[in-house]
Length: 406
Ligand SMILES: [Zn+2]
Image (tube, rainbow, N blue to C red; front, side, top):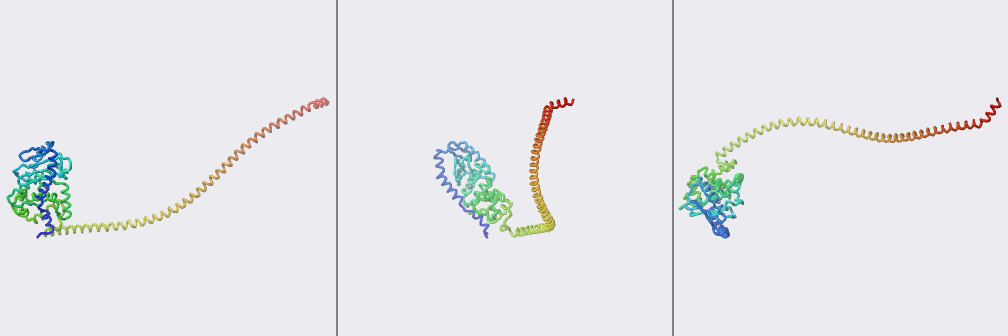
């Protein structure tokens, strides 16, 4: 029986890789190659025992670097995917390409079209991991080996799920792009395995295959002469596609540390999960009881605080009333003070007026005193004058009188 969830990997099977490769190659040959070679004239080349690097004039440095990296790529690939190609892989490097790279691979040859190693622009996200030329070349090189093994079989399936072809290319190149990890996490968290993530999901499916069954089994799966990929899987890995999917789902959820959705659990696992949940529930209940006790405790404290608050509140009201009264008293006193101040000011003015009057009277008195002294002098002088005058007038009569007497 095939359940809905188990259909998902099945959706990835579309045998479109070969067609896509040919279409891309066709467009590529039509559009790009004549352009570049037309601009740059003849292609130059350097080669060794495994590779021929073709390059436009002026890109000899890039060609040498490409050949150096190609040897590293072959060694890396050899470790997880031992192989022997009966032809040299052709690598054509371009100063510019609309995509980082594309490969045409068959049983008789392989040509990789790739941006030159010195390309400084984006490499479709591969630059995030560093070494983007190596990573992209490695990916295409694995395709070359993979399709040689697939197409050179005298019989057996030729069509593979996209996730398998892209996944093995990324797995062997160790291209764990951050976006793949993020995407797979999102897929797992959404609880569904969605088709259309051939690179991201394929990388992890192939990693699972290598970890669970070993590289030799994976390679014999590619070389299998069974009529379909899924038949080959059963034959070489000894597992049915649905079992494979079920095991992979368990593995990937575990790898990402995300709990497996219930729909993927077996009966005994469900019982186990139920027990776990029951234990968790008991724990929660204990926690709940503790919290309840704490709550009761807090409630008592709350009541105490409430009564304290109530008392304080009353005191506050009383103090507030007292304060209001004091405020009123203060205002009254303030008014009185201001009245007294005004009164004082007017008294002060009166005092100053009186002081001025006193001063003027004092001045006047002095003047009168001076006048009086003057008058006294005048009077004295008058009296002296008068007496003198009288005595002068009286002098002869006095003499006569005195003579008479004598
Ligand atoms: Zn690819």
